[in-house]
Every structure is written in C-alpha cells, then in structure tokens.
Length: 408
Image (cartoon, rainbow, N blue to C red; front, side, top):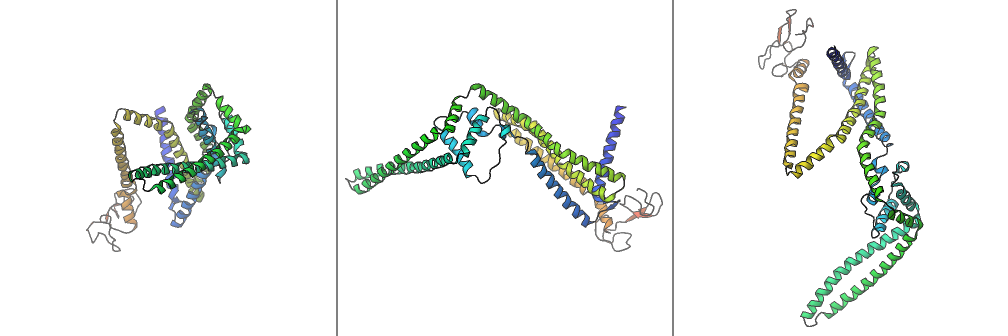
C-alpha cells in the first residue's frame, strides 16, 4: 500500500514537472514567439537579480561571527597578541584605519560577545575622540620618519666602516669623505633622538588618557576562563551560523516561491495562458536561489569539513597525490555527464529530426529538399512511409502521422 502511494506521488511529481517544462516555452499549446521569449528572459533576469539583492539585504540582518567576535578581540583574548610592547602600535593601526576610511559600516553593537564588549566599547570611544585620534596620527607620522632614519643610518654606518678601512689602507687618503659621512651620521642620529623623544612624549599622552588607561587595565585583568569561554563560543558560532543563515534565507525565499506557486496553480486551473506562462517562469526563477542556498549550506556543514580532514589525513600519510587523482576523475565524470546531457537531451536524434522536418530538410543528410520531393536528390533517402493506422504516406521520422495524427 505504501509502495503504491509512493509511486502515485512520484507520478504526480513527474506530471507536475512535465507541465512546468511545457509552460516555460508554450502559450495555449503553441510555441511562444521570439519577441515574447526575449521579454520573458529579461523579466527572469531582472527578478532573479532582485531576489538575490533582496536576499543579501535580508541575510545581512543576521549577525555574522565577525560581528559578535571581531578579529582584534580574538587577537586580544584568544591569541594574546596585545602585549605592553606592541599594544600602542596595535591600537594605533585600528584608530588610524578608522580615521582614514571613507566608507564606514555601522557595527551591530547589540550582538557583541560579553567578553569582547568592554574592549569594543572602549575602542569605539577612542575612535570617536578626534583629539586623541590626532595624537595617534602624529605618533604614526613620527614613527614612520624614525624608521626611515634608522634605515638611512644603517646604510651610512656601512658606508662609514667601508670608507674608514679604505682610508687606512691608502695611508689616510680620502679622509674628507670619511669626515663627511661621519658628520651626516651624527646629524641623522641627533634627528632620530629628537623624533624618539617626541614619540615618547606622545605615547605618554596616549597612556595618560582615561579611556586608554582603562583599556590597558582591562587587558591586564583578562582571565584564562575568559579565553576558554570565548574560544568555545566562537567554535559554536561558526558551527551554527550556516544553519541560522539558511533559516534566514528561507524566511525570505519560501514565501516568494509559495506566492508564485499558488499563482501558477490558479492560472493553470483557470486556463489563463499568459499568467500561467509568466508565473511558471517566476516560480522556476524563485526556486533557483532556494536550491543553491541549500547546496551551499550542506557543503559548508558536511563536505567542507570532511574534505579538510581528508586532505589533512592524506598530507600526514604523504598521499596528497590521491586527492588530485580524485579531482581528475571527478572532472572526467562531469565532462561525460555534460556531453551526455547535450548529446542525448539537447541535441538528440529526435530533436535533430524535429528541426530538419520543420525546416524542410532531408531527414538523413540534412540538406534542403526541393519542394514536393518524395526522396532526397542528394543521398536518395525516402522521406515517407505508410502510416501504420491509416496507411497513407507520412514522414519517416515524424512522431505522429501527418494525415491522421496517430502516434508512429
């Protein structure tokens, strides 16, 4: 009983798909004109583009892992990359990048992780402090100048040592060149010391700021439990995010598909040809993103992780070549499948015969037949045979008799 019901369901699905395929290209049982087809294709492209744009805007409302736990919070808490020796440089990079950006995306502050929120809030306050941002920019400028001077001093020291050795070897010849290099070296060293003093003064001003001082205190107060909690929550967020994203996407796509499906069903039942044609196209167009988003989510959850583990295993066993053998085999299989589809479905002999008969060509060699020809004057192939139902002449490769309409 269940098996029979299953067969009935499969049969109904096949009938429905066949009807959809027919309604995509026919209007009132007649092929649609090329002009109408162009209009429909433009509509399909416009609707598909609008659906993907709306889907992107809708899905963006879902907090991403980077919104809850930004990378710099991971560096602070999980990686422990912010130390007393580099924390000003790290903070300076964030502040200057924000200050120089032309396009700023508003962050989803309400979705911040509790461990990250105190750091993010303080950094936001520092970003909005224009006077403090100017101090960071000035320090960055002096820091670039000092690094450039250090490079030049290094070059001069190398030149000085070389010139000094040459002077000794030449019995004090070239002493003027050595003195000039020594003078330049001294001047640049003095300038570098001045710059370092200015940088120290600016860093003192930065460290004296209340918001920065509070940020450093929170850095010092980080506990191992905070690190473990953030790392565990980050793994959980990355695991569940694809499923939540799919749910958000389906909230947008499924109602749209349901509307087009209901419209299509009503149009077919009431024999509204133009509406059935348009609604069928819109139903197929709205199903395309549903199909691809489901495939994308399944790939993110299962095969992507499995492939990563598989490649790691092959690398550990020094058998990575097997992976490339598999990729080559997959490419060959895909090529065979595509060729099969083109050859058997799109360019099959049945389709070829339909085109040749419609254009008045020979069913055997494909050359244009003179009007009224019973056989091809080029290859001699007889174009007609007796119908099995009415016994009158009908085309050899025709699916139905041209006289009585019976299937051949």
